[in-house]
Image (cartoon, rainbow, N blue to C red):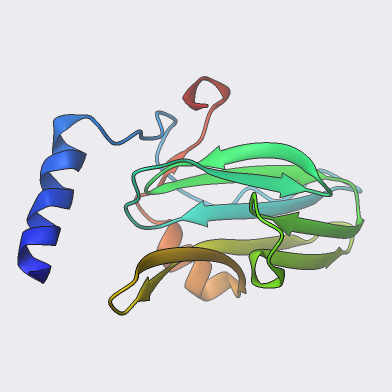
Length: 142
C-alpha cells in the first residue's frame, strides 16, 4: 500500500499537477541588512497544497513543495503561524538585530490517519542541509 501511495505521489508531482516554486535554487545564506532580521522558512517535502505562512497575523508567503522563503523584517518578537489556530502551528521568534533564524514547515506522518504539518525552529546546520536544492518562492508563485 505504501508503495502505491509513493508511486501516486511521484506521478502527480511529475505530471505538473503539484504547484512548485519557480525562483532560483538555494545557494548560500544572505545575511540581514544593518538593523534587520532574516527568517528562512522552508518546506522540504512534497505536498499537494500551498501552506500559508503568517507573521504576526499578516500573510507573508505560501510555501510550496521543496521551497523556501527569505523573510526580512525588523527586530522584535514575531509570531509565525500556519493558517490554523492550533498551538503547535506557531513559532515565536525573539529576533535580535543582525540575526538569522530558520523555521521548517514540517511534514508529520499520522499512522493510518494521513498527514499533517507544523512549524518547528531549526538550527543553522540542519537548516542549511535541508535548504540545499529548494527553490525560492517568488510573488508570482502564489
